[in-house]
Image (cartoon, rainbow, N blue to C red; front, side):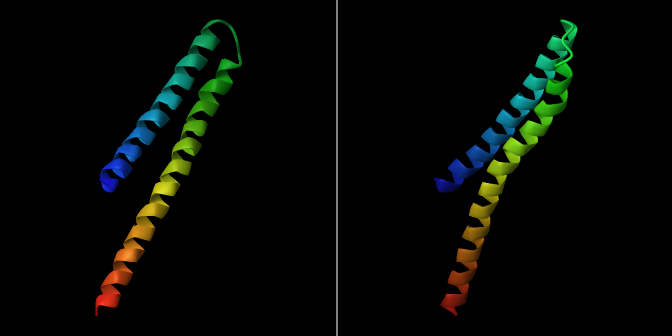
Length: 80
């Protein structure tokens, strides 16, 4: 059950990151279409924000996976 939740969270992080990036780009294009040059900032900064957002969560999942693998390795060593 725990692995299912972690895998689901991983997929959800990628989906939300994609929505952030695509939404920011579309919002930026719409703003530029209305003559607002701030839309250029949206186009540039939205993908950067999405990368940071996904990276922070994926870092936490990576720590969880490394801790799990270390615990399994120590259990195998203790069984010898």
